[in-house]
Image (cartoon, rainbow over the protein chains, first blue to last red):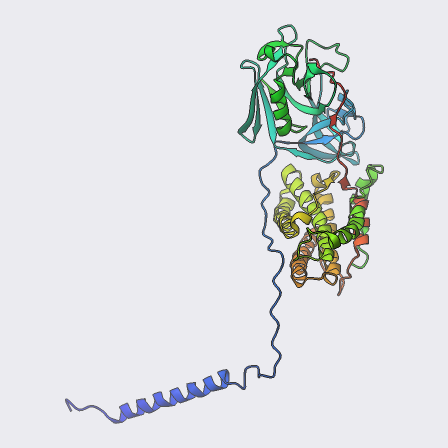
Length: 264
Length: 227
């Protein structure tokens, strides 16, 4: 039997393969043939219009340095929500007639049927933190800048995030009326007044000069221009921070009300 | 959603309670002005050389109104996220929805180009600092926006703007259903949703007093700082 191949099984296999191919071809004709697809008489669907928008998610972005809120009605800041102990009376107006503002410290508590929020407000001699009814405050505004005054170097630096965007030489308080150190904030901005002494722009802050407690408008420290640029840098003022007029104008373009102020 | 009011979603009365505390604050007529502004804009664009050929005057007016509503929603979610006073569970969905709403603002602004309105100022009156109030207000505004977009869909001229509104509508409807479910409110109580008119939206937004005017922090008085 060596050298002989079986002929019948081979013929049977070939017949089976052929039969399989015929079945596959028949199935393909049934599935893909013209009788199963849309006839030429069927209406074609119109193309969908392209949307005029291509919205994508937008992440939150960098956290602001702080939020501030205007004081809508005069109210006390209290040691605790709805508590009896008052840490500061917070008027609705500054001595300059602008809206008074407080910094929002990011804590809220519902007590006695109303929402209370913790804020920072001007105090004596330093800012105080206390609780005020949320209803006494207006909408929150984010602030992304911070002003740092270095008394030793007599410079003012405005930071956006961690990046310095402004730096200028300043004059500060004389030894008898020093500029206070601590953390404060910018409360308002004045301009177009008639006083060369304060230069073209003046910012009011929450800081109070310790040597000017009997000052008529509360002895608040300002950041302003000057008609004596020859005294900058120096220790010459009654507590205010003075800078050259060109610098205060530049600062006014960059710094918004509510900016936290660190005096070192 | 046939009677879409704050009361519809403010089951516990928490939102109304907060607004009552305010004792009638500043009346937000921004949206009311927006209605008048829409008509004025239509007239202006008919004779203006700055009209964008892609958007008809009517479509511009509709998109400007939508942009203002998207500003409100985006600002509310962003403020809540940043203040961090709402619970971690609420913050989880607020982050997702907030990113969507900010995306809507950016996209509609891009579509309107120079015709885009600026964002008004908002005072959320504690809503962004109170979990329950925040959730209920979010439901109210998502429902409101979905209902408004449905009304506008049959009013727009451009098929491209129609497609845009449809894509916004489905996302706002999903927001509404998601937050409703979380808040324990049935996502689809009725078999059909009724559309809502722009005037009804204005009334509802005004009732919240969320839109405010700017406060005066600049003055011209002579400084009385220590000098």
